[in-house]
Image (cartoon, rainbow, N blue to C red; front, top):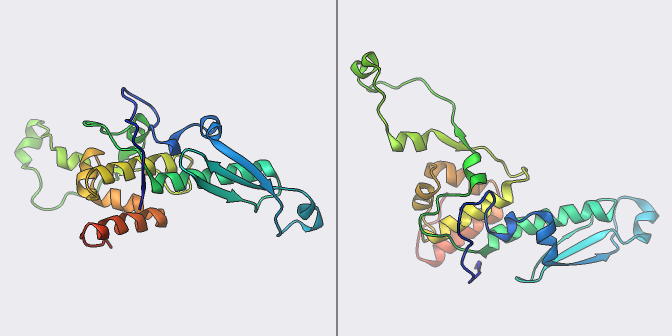
Length: 214
């Protein structure tokens, strides 16, 4: 079950989403308790003598993330910060505003999909001959893809935005896709990039008597 934040989202245009998973490093760390510990693993005796493991606890939610696989505490802090962002994106909901169609960052990550050969039964050739272009909103949405994979720095921010939109739509991705101007298949593909998010969405759907998505 995802945690719910009661504070209303900030109004006005924004580059980054209002969710804490989208905050700059400095701002997110201001809301975290940082602790260090020793860990075993590659690096030999020197690693065991130095406290390189880092634990970040997000104090407003109580969520935490740990990293200790890197040789330096600074590197582990960056790893823990990304893990915390991902956990917040999945488990912490901030809600969306009416009419909110995505942050500037989200829109910047929507790009035109590769064009395919026209299928039979396409636009009347008369329109092509006259130089008339028909506007088809649905076709425009189908022609967009989300240019961001799970390894990208922006992924936690965009995932938080997607999960908030899906929750606002009653965990129905089709309605969330309309809000975010992408096809449902693109939205589902994006959520499936990160297994905990996919599991969370299906669990919330099951809790509401809805079928699991495959």
